[in-house]
Image (tube, rainbow, N blue to C red; front, side, top):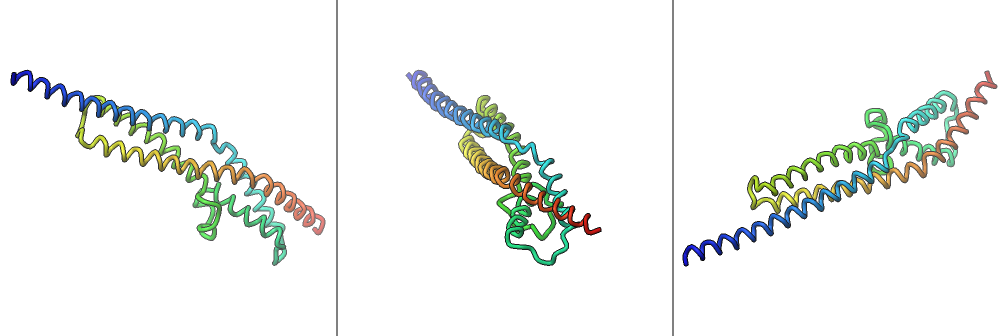
Amino acid sequence: MKILFGFLTFACLSSCIDFSKQEHLETVNTLSQQVDSLHTLFEKNRMDSIVYMRVEMNNIEQRIKRYYTGDTIDRNLGRKMDVFRKIKKSIMPENEVGEEAENEGHGEPIMELHKLLQIGLREEKKSLKLLYSDIESGSGDRKKYAKYIDFEREKVMQLTSIYAMYANQKMWLSKNFHKIRNDLMNYTLQLEQAALLNE
């Protein structure tokens, strides 16, 4: 009878552990799917035009520095230059922007968000894969699996938030860059032509 009772107790405990193990594995699998979905969205939403944008912005800035001789700027041009500075801050590496633009701009620089997502998604995939493997094989302290899962869930939520900022920033850049670029490029070409005529 004692052997039967011992066997039943062991079977009950095993089934509880297996249930908890299965639940943990499903949760980790769900988190992995969320990270894969975020990665897919990120890949579809890459900023491939950054180099082009940088070159164009540098060309405009050089023309303004070279050909603009006035000591005041009209309000319309001032607004465009303000948006121009915000775009520049967002797409240029921090060491190229300068200290004067440090606290200005539209949100976090997109290049910083891009880097955070690129590294964060790669690391989170590895972390979840290792956690899944540990839970599946029963490695480590099983009592802490729920804490580990909560920690990884928090990291996935942070990555989701970073992606939302990245997507909003990209949309803002796409909306504003081409209009500002065209307006300022035309303006600086007029400045250049006027300067050449006055030589």
